[in-house]
Image (tube, rainbow, N blue to C red):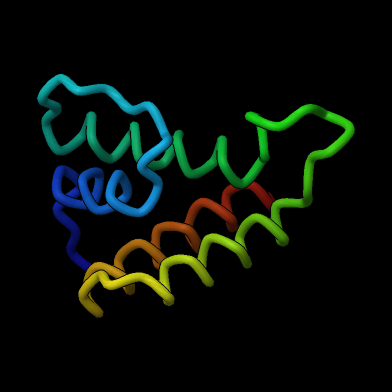
Length: 93
């Protein structure tokens, strides 16, 4: 699946408006790196107090549910979900 990571960063921002991501212009590789790191951080629930953290599987479920219930295009939804799956597989290794 081909992605434009620069546009997927913007798609991610639309879904998670409270996430602080860089505002500077990034190239494709930098956008990919930022998106993967941000999603990994989200799935590890790093922004939550350690005693209230949820498992990566629970966070994955909530993320996919939010994506599917959004008004994004089908292509954007599939692209983001595919990236979430890739990150989840990396975390589980």
